[in-house]
Image (cartoon, rainbow, N blue to C red; front, top):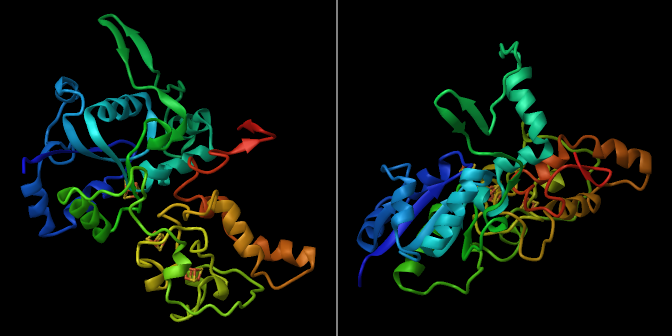
Length: 322
Ligand code: SF4
Ligand code: SF4
Ligand code: SF4
Protein backbone atom coordinates (compact mmCIF):
# COMPACT_ATOMS: atom_id res chain seq x y z
CA UNK A 1 0.00 0.00 0.00
CA UNK A 2 1.51 3.40 -0.95
CA UNK A 3 2.24 5.73 1.92
CA UNK A 4 -0.32 8.42 2.73
CA UNK A 5 0.63 12.08 2.72
CA UNK A 6 -0.12 13.47 6.19
CA UNK A 7 -0.19 17.13 7.21
CA UNK A 8 -0.49 18.55 10.71
CA UNK A 9 -1.19 22.27 11.03
CA UNK A 10 -1.98 24.69 13.84
CA UNK A 11 -3.62 28.10 13.99
CA UNK A 12 -5.02 29.75 17.17
CA UNK A 13 -3.80 26.94 19.40
CA UNK A 14 -1.55 26.30 22.38
CA UNK A 15 0.59 23.54 20.90
CA UNK A 16 -0.91 20.87 23.16
CA UNK A 17 -2.73 19.21 20.26
CA UNK A 18 0.49 18.96 18.26
CA UNK A 19 2.27 17.44 21.24
CA UNK A 20 -0.60 15.01 21.86
CA UNK A 21 0.22 13.32 18.55
CA UNK A 22 3.56 12.35 20.05
CA UNK A 23 1.77 10.89 23.12
CA UNK A 24 0.79 7.82 21.13
CA UNK A 25 4.15 6.25 22.03
CA UNK A 26 5.10 3.29 19.84
CA UNK A 27 2.07 3.88 17.61
CA UNK A 28 4.04 6.77 16.16
CA UNK A 29 6.05 4.07 14.35
CA UNK A 30 2.81 2.96 12.70
CA UNK A 31 2.27 6.55 11.61
CA UNK A 32 5.80 6.52 10.19
CA UNK A 33 5.06 3.32 8.25
CA UNK A 34 1.69 4.58 7.12
CA UNK A 35 2.44 8.13 6.14
CA UNK A 36 4.91 10.66 4.84
CA UNK A 37 4.62 13.82 6.87
CA UNK A 38 4.46 16.53 4.22
CA UNK A 39 3.72 19.45 6.57
CA UNK A 40 4.08 19.82 10.34
CA UNK A 41 5.33 23.29 11.35
CA UNK A 42 5.88 22.19 14.97
CA UNK A 43 8.30 19.47 13.94
CA UNK A 44 9.81 20.52 10.60
CA UNK A 45 10.31 23.58 8.46
CA UNK A 46 7.55 24.09 5.93
CA UNK A 47 6.60 27.15 3.93
CA UNK A 48 3.31 28.43 2.62
CA UNK A 49 4.72 28.26 -0.92
CA UNK A 50 5.51 24.54 -0.46
CA UNK A 51 1.86 23.84 0.27
CA UNK A 52 0.70 26.13 -2.51
CA UNK A 53 2.82 24.21 -5.00
CA UNK A 54 1.19 20.87 -4.11
CA UNK A 55 -1.54 19.61 -6.40
CA UNK A 56 -5.09 19.90 -5.08
CA UNK A 57 -5.89 16.77 -3.05
CA UNK A 58 -2.18 15.88 -2.74
CA UNK A 59 -2.48 15.64 1.06
CA UNK A 60 -4.41 12.50 2.02
CA UNK A 61 -5.14 13.50 5.62
CA UNK A 62 -4.71 16.84 7.35
CA UNK A 63 -5.01 17.08 11.13
CA UNK A 64 -5.89 20.73 11.70
CA UNK A 65 -5.75 22.08 15.23
CA UNK A 66 -6.60 25.57 16.39
CA UNK A 67 -9.36 28.10 15.96
CA UNK A 68 -9.45 30.83 13.31
CA UNK A 69 -8.80 34.42 14.44
CA UNK A 70 -6.53 35.90 11.80
CA UNK A 71 -6.92 36.35 8.05
CA UNK A 72 -3.73 34.30 7.59
CA UNK A 73 -5.28 31.41 9.53
CA UNK A 74 -8.38 31.54 7.37
CA UNK A 75 -6.21 31.56 4.25
CA UNK A 76 -4.29 28.48 5.46
CA UNK A 77 -7.54 26.69 6.35
CA UNK A 78 -8.85 27.31 2.82
CA UNK A 79 -5.56 26.29 1.23
CA UNK A 80 -5.29 23.09 3.27
CA UNK A 81 -8.93 22.27 2.55
CA UNK A 82 -8.15 22.47 -1.15
CA UNK A 83 -4.99 20.41 -0.86
CA UNK A 84 -6.44 17.70 1.44
CA UNK A 85 -8.66 14.77 0.63
CA UNK A 86 -9.60 14.39 4.30
CA UNK A 87 -9.58 17.38 6.64
CA UNK A 88 -9.93 16.54 10.33
CA UNK A 89 -10.78 19.18 12.94
CA UNK A 90 -8.40 18.03 15.64
CA UNK A 91 -8.94 19.20 19.22
CA UNK A 92 -11.45 21.50 20.88
CA UNK A 93 -10.05 24.72 19.40
CA UNK A 94 -10.56 23.57 15.81
CA UNK A 95 -13.87 21.80 16.53
CA UNK A 96 -15.58 24.38 18.76
CA UNK A 97 -13.31 27.43 19.19
CA UNK A 98 -11.78 26.11 22.41
CA UNK A 99 -10.03 28.32 24.93
CA UNK A 100 -9.12 30.98 22.29
CA UNK A 101 -12.87 31.19 21.62
CA UNK A 102 -13.42 32.74 25.07
CA UNK A 103 -12.18 35.95 23.42
CA UNK A 104 -15.67 36.18 21.88
CA UNK A 105 -16.76 37.59 25.25
CA UNK A 106 -14.94 40.76 24.17
CA UNK A 107 -14.71 42.90 21.06
CA UNK A 108 -11.57 43.27 19.00
CA UNK A 109 -11.17 46.86 20.30
CA UNK A 110 -11.46 45.75 23.94
CA UNK A 111 -8.79 43.11 23.39
CA UNK A 112 -6.40 45.48 21.58
CA UNK A 113 -6.87 48.18 24.27
CA UNK A 114 -6.26 45.69 27.06
CA UNK A 115 -3.17 44.16 25.50
CA UNK A 116 -1.51 47.30 24.10
CA UNK A 117 -2.69 50.08 26.44
CA UNK A 118 -4.25 49.03 29.73
CA UNK A 119 -2.21 46.29 31.36
CA UNK A 120 -0.31 47.49 34.46
CA UNK A 121 3.02 46.65 32.83
CA UNK A 122 2.33 48.48 29.56
CA UNK A 123 4.29 51.64 28.78
CA UNK A 124 2.70 52.96 25.58
CA UNK A 125 2.21 56.72 25.98
CA UNK A 126 1.57 57.17 22.26
CA UNK A 127 -1.16 54.52 22.30
CA UNK A 128 0.40 52.60 19.42
CA UNK A 129 -1.47 49.51 18.30
CA UNK A 130 -0.76 47.06 15.46
CA UNK A 131 -2.23 48.01 12.08
CA UNK A 132 -3.05 45.64 9.25
CA UNK A 133 -1.02 47.81 6.83
CA UNK A 134 1.52 50.57 7.29
CA UNK A 135 3.48 52.67 4.81
CA UNK A 136 7.24 52.90 5.31
CA UNK A 137 9.77 54.51 2.94
CA UNK A 138 10.54 51.07 1.51
CA UNK A 139 6.90 50.35 0.71
CA UNK A 140 3.85 48.86 2.40
CA UNK A 141 4.19 46.47 5.33
CA UNK A 142 1.27 44.29 6.25
CA UNK A 143 0.18 42.07 9.12
CA UNK A 144 -2.61 39.48 9.06
CA UNK A 145 -5.99 41.00 9.92
CA UNK A 146 -7.19 40.40 13.48
CA UNK A 147 -10.89 39.54 13.17
CA UNK A 148 -13.55 40.70 15.60
CA UNK A 149 -14.60 37.07 16.17
CA UNK A 150 -12.92 33.74 16.77
CA UNK A 151 -14.30 31.10 14.40
CA UNK A 152 -14.29 27.32 14.52
CA UNK A 153 -12.67 25.47 11.61
CA UNK A 154 -16.02 24.17 10.28
CA UNK A 155 -17.36 27.74 10.26
CA UNK A 156 -14.67 28.55 7.70
CA UNK A 157 -14.28 25.39 5.58
CA UNK A 158 -15.96 22.03 5.17
CA UNK A 159 -14.57 19.47 7.61
CA UNK A 160 -14.67 15.69 7.10
CA UNK A 161 -14.19 14.45 10.68
CA UNK A 162 -13.91 15.79 14.20
CA UNK A 163 -11.62 14.54 16.96
CA UNK A 164 -12.51 16.54 20.08
CA UNK A 165 -10.63 17.03 23.32
CA UNK A 166 -8.20 19.48 24.87
CA UNK A 167 -6.10 17.78 23.72
CA UNK A 168 -7.67 14.64 22.19
CA UNK A 169 -6.89 11.53 24.27
CA UNK A 170 -4.49 8.92 22.96
CA UNK A 171 -7.09 6.19 22.36
CA UNK A 172 -9.09 8.46 20.02
CA UNK A 173 -5.96 9.34 18.06
CA UNK A 174 -5.11 5.62 17.81
CA UNK A 175 -8.71 4.88 16.73
CA UNK A 176 -8.42 7.46 13.97
CA UNK A 177 -5.02 6.13 12.84
CA UNK A 178 -6.36 2.56 12.74
CA UNK A 179 -9.40 3.69 10.75
CA UNK A 180 -7.17 5.48 8.25
CA UNK A 181 -4.74 2.52 8.06
CA UNK A 182 -7.50 -0.01 7.39
CA UNK A 183 -9.50 2.34 5.20
CA UNK A 184 -12.48 1.94 7.53
CA UNK A 185 -13.29 5.56 8.13
CA UNK A 186 -16.77 6.27 9.50
CA UNK A 187 -19.31 8.32 7.51
CA UNK A 188 -18.22 11.85 6.70
CA UNK A 189 -19.08 14.32 9.46
CA UNK A 190 -18.58 11.80 12.27
CA UNK A 191 -17.28 13.02 15.60
CA UNK A 192 -14.71 10.38 16.55
CA UNK A 193 -15.76 10.12 20.21
CA UNK A 194 -18.79 8.90 22.18
CA UNK A 195 -22.27 9.70 21.00
CA UNK A 196 -23.99 10.13 24.38
CA UNK A 197 -23.36 12.64 27.15
CA UNK A 198 -20.45 12.02 29.52
CA UNK A 199 -22.86 11.28 32.41
CA UNK A 200 -23.78 8.02 30.59
CA UNK A 201 -20.23 6.71 30.92
CA UNK A 202 -19.43 8.25 34.31
CA UNK A 203 -19.17 5.66 37.09
CA UNK A 204 -20.19 8.07 39.85
CA UNK A 205 -23.38 7.29 41.76
CA UNK A 206 -26.36 9.49 40.91
CA UNK A 207 -29.15 9.65 43.49
CA UNK A 208 -31.27 12.56 42.24
CA UNK A 209 -29.98 14.51 45.19
CA UNK A 210 -30.85 18.22 45.32
CA UNK A 211 -28.39 20.91 46.40
CA UNK A 212 -28.66 24.17 48.30
CA UNK A 213 -25.21 25.50 47.48
CA UNK A 214 -22.53 25.36 44.81
CA UNK A 215 -18.87 25.14 45.67
CA UNK A 216 -15.60 24.88 43.79
CA UNK A 217 -13.62 21.64 44.07
CA UNK A 218 -10.92 23.17 46.30
CA UNK A 219 -13.56 24.31 48.82
CA UNK A 220 -14.87 20.83 49.68
CA UNK A 221 -13.61 17.37 50.38
CA UNK A 222 -14.88 15.63 47.27
CA UNK A 223 -16.62 12.28 47.70
CA UNK A 224 -14.87 10.04 45.11
CA UNK A 225 -17.95 7.88 44.53
CA UNK A 226 -20.81 10.35 44.15
CA UNK A 227 -21.89 12.54 41.25
CA UNK A 228 -20.03 15.83 41.49
CA UNK A 229 -23.01 17.91 40.45
CA UNK A 230 -25.04 16.35 43.26
CA UNK A 231 -22.24 17.40 45.61
CA UNK A 232 -22.76 21.00 44.47
CA UNK A 233 -19.71 21.06 42.19
CA UNK A 234 -20.48 22.37 38.72
CA UNK A 235 -19.75 19.49 36.34
CA UNK A 236 -20.60 19.86 32.67
CA UNK A 237 -21.09 16.11 32.15
CA UNK A 238 -24.83 16.40 31.34
CA UNK A 239 -24.10 18.64 28.32
CA UNK A 240 -20.77 17.20 27.15
CA UNK A 241 -20.09 14.47 24.64
CA UNK A 242 -18.63 11.33 26.20
CA UNK A 243 -15.66 9.40 24.88
CA UNK A 244 -12.85 10.66 27.10
CA UNK A 245 -13.43 7.93 29.69
CA UNK A 246 -14.04 10.58 32.36
CA UNK A 247 -10.47 11.90 32.39
CA UNK A 248 -11.39 14.66 34.85
CA UNK A 249 -14.28 13.18 36.83
CA UNK A 250 -12.10 10.10 37.44
CA UNK A 251 -9.66 12.24 39.42
CA UNK A 252 -12.28 14.21 41.37
CA UNK A 253 -12.31 17.15 38.99
CA UNK A 254 -15.51 18.28 37.28
CA UNK A 255 -15.91 18.05 33.52
CA UNK A 256 -15.38 21.40 31.80
CA UNK A 257 -16.78 20.33 28.47
CA UNK A 258 -13.71 19.91 26.24
CA UNK A 259 -15.47 17.26 24.12
CA UNK A 260 -18.09 19.79 23.08
CA UNK A 261 -21.84 19.31 23.16
CA UNK A 262 -23.22 15.76 23.18
CA UNK A 263 -24.95 14.64 19.98
CA UNK A 264 -28.44 15.59 21.18
CA UNK A 265 -27.37 18.92 22.73
CA UNK A 266 -27.83 22.06 20.64
CA UNK A 267 -26.22 24.46 23.09
CA UNK A 268 -24.17 23.32 26.07
CA UNK A 269 -24.87 26.46 28.11
CA UNK A 270 -28.63 26.09 27.73
CA UNK A 271 -28.36 22.41 28.60
CA UNK A 272 -26.34 23.18 31.72
CA UNK A 273 -28.85 25.83 32.84
CA UNK A 274 -31.53 23.11 32.60
CA UNK A 275 -29.38 20.56 34.46
CA UNK A 276 -28.63 23.02 37.23
CA UNK A 277 -32.25 24.13 37.53
CA UNK A 278 -33.24 20.50 38.04
CA UNK A 279 -30.97 19.99 41.06
CA UNK A 280 -31.56 23.21 43.01
CA UNK A 281 -33.39 22.40 46.23
CA UNK A 282 -35.69 25.41 46.49
CA UNK A 283 -38.92 26.82 45.09
CA UNK A 284 -38.30 30.30 46.48
CA UNK A 285 -37.19 32.70 43.70
CA UNK A 286 -35.03 34.78 46.06
CA UNK A 287 -33.27 31.73 47.45
CA UNK A 288 -32.78 30.34 43.91
CA UNK A 289 -31.15 33.64 42.90
CA UNK A 290 -28.83 33.40 45.90
CA UNK A 291 -27.87 29.82 45.06
CA UNK A 292 -27.29 30.69 41.39
CA UNK A 293 -24.96 33.53 42.39
CA UNK A 294 -22.67 30.91 43.95
CA UNK A 295 -21.76 29.70 40.45
CA UNK A 296 -18.53 31.47 39.60
CA UNK A 297 -18.36 32.74 35.99
CA UNK A 298 -21.26 30.67 34.61
CA UNK A 299 -20.80 31.78 30.98
CA UNK A 300 -17.05 31.14 31.05
CA UNK A 301 -17.66 27.77 32.69
CA UNK A 302 -20.44 26.47 30.46
CA UNK A 303 -18.85 27.75 27.23
CA UNK A 304 -15.22 27.25 28.20
CA UNK A 305 -14.44 25.25 25.09
CA UNK A 306 -17.23 26.16 22.74
CA UNK A 307 -18.39 29.79 22.75
CA UNK A 308 -17.89 30.30 18.97
CA UNK A 309 -19.79 27.05 18.36
CA UNK A 310 -22.70 28.02 20.65
CA UNK A 311 -26.02 29.37 19.43
CA UNK A 312 -25.06 32.98 20.20
CA UNK A 313 -21.40 32.51 19.15
CA UNK A 314 -20.29 35.58 21.11
CA UNK A 315 -21.35 38.05 23.78
CA UNK A 316 -24.25 40.19 22.62
CA UNK A 317 -25.97 43.18 24.20
CA UNK A 318 -29.59 43.93 23.32
CA UNK A 319 -29.29 41.76 20.25
CA UNK A 320 -26.12 43.49 19.09
CA UNK A 321 -22.55 42.29 19.08
CA UNK A 322 -20.92 43.96 22.07
S1 SF4 B 1 -7.61 21.98 22.02
FE1 SF4 B 1 -6.52 22.38 23.94
S2 SF4 B 1 -4.56 21.35 23.67
FE2 SF4 B 1 -5.47 21.59 21.62
S3 SF4 B 1 -4.65 23.52 20.87
FE3 SF4 B 1 -6.61 23.96 21.82
S4 SF4 B 1 -6.07 24.58 23.91
FE4 SF4 B 1 -4.30 23.50 23.08
S1 SF4 C 1 -22.58 15.38 36.37
FE1 SF4 C 1 -20.41 14.87 36.24
S2 SF4 C 1 -20.00 13.64 38.04
FE2 SF4 C 1 -22.21 13.66 37.76
S3 SF4 C 1 -22.64 11.85 36.57
FE3 SF4 C 1 -22.39 13.53 35.13
S4 SF4 C 1 -20.25 13.45 34.54
FE4 SF4 C 1 -20.45 12.22 36.39
S1 SF4 D 1 -14.09 15.02 31.62
FE1 SF4 D 1 -14.85 16.69 30.35
S2 SF4 D 1 -13.26 18.26 30.40
FE2 SF4 D 1 -12.35 16.35 31.14
S3 SF4 D 1 -11.46 15.40 29.33
FE3 SF4 D 1 -13.51 14.57 29.52
S4 SF4 D 1 -14.78 15.92 28.25
FE4 SF4 D 1 -12.86 16.98 28.61
